[in-house]
Image 1 (spheres, helix red, strand yellow):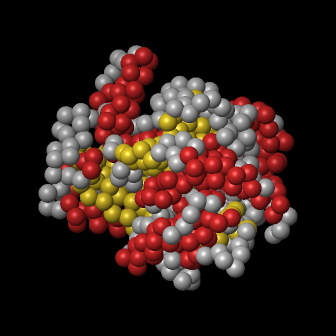
Image 2 (image 1 turned 45 degrees about the vertical axis):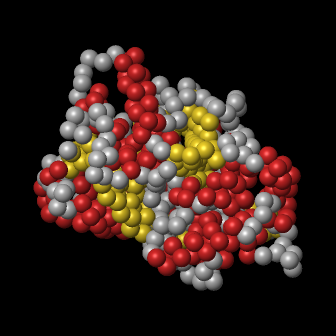
Image 3 (image 1 turned 30 degrees about the horizontal axis):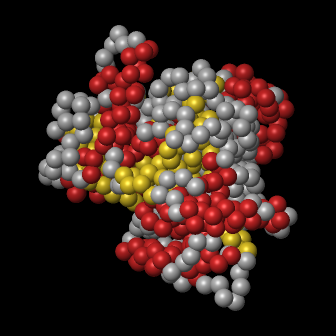
Length: 536
């Protein structure tokens, strides 16, 4: 028996999952003596909330590293003595994408990372679009030129923090890649995560030199690009003592968080969609060409050649659930930093989520006319507005906490419906993954608002970890050569088939009567932003 250590470096927590793998590499994930889908042990360590300063949202990369170490040591404590560090054959990570991480020649962070949810570089993005051409940018990058992209943020650093820019030796775009640099001393990025950088040609999967020239930055500081299943290095002997990984343990490129959840969900062709409710939210589909002319849709390179992930990103999803739980189910106050999104955290945090579920059980579809505009952190879809904030409309003397709690989740569901409407064509299936899947009534709200049955994964929080382990250990990925492009497709299809076989799930069916209530409420919801956008 061998083991793969998987990690997700998110906004609210670093999660570690140890997955057991049969000795016949990639043949099967063992469930003998392990938890669901081969899960041997898991741990989640909360991060401090992102700093929200004058300029925007930031996190400290060293906090990611500290939480990574703590999460891994907690997993080792659970698995020991059955699992020893020498038994771990590989390390693979996913992480929050679209960050800007600047390090010096020694790999030390020069400043806090600027997060994906930070939109400070609107002026620089407009400048870049003018120099390079907005339509050319969309055609090459596959996405709009906007201030939340790392490349315009790098231009912002050059203009506003020139001394830091001058000392920058390496730039990274995913939180996981900072961890990889600490483990191996190598500076890499995966093509899925780097699709969000604003600097990569999504068709060639290479950095675009003309675009970088327009931005006024050199290519020498950019990371080496890889597909997620590539081995990019191994654990350095010196770092082994700190991490408790054996020296030489293989480290893989991994994949950005949206890519990991899309892989785990089994989305592989048009008509299949996955909704991920983490701290933020994401709807993912697949196409043969990037959807560059569809407003609000982001395009990412798939982990295998020849396809593109089409995603609609939301800044507000599980963070709204968390806010509602601490505000309405725990008397408000400062958030407990140990609480993750959607019910992960300390026993105290779990109490408030249980109370949240109790409040929801006393609610009704439509929340007695109360509507919530859930743009508490600004928003990037269905509107690009970093300054907008959330609001409740329709409150009366008869309104209850249950109404406000449910309206909060209904507001997120309405936003997700607006995202689904961005995709043309029919819907074959909708799957749900992420912490939001743990709130049973929210799953039902989503099915009713979307007017479509939803497949909700059991152990949804573990499926990306299993998918990552399979991705790096699938037989063809372990050095088999001479495969044709057709064989590559067959292999990927086989991987997706196996992941579908592994997952347990339940179907949440639409309630026709409640769907009718939501149809009317949705029409009113769509009027909220136009009516409230001028109020700041």
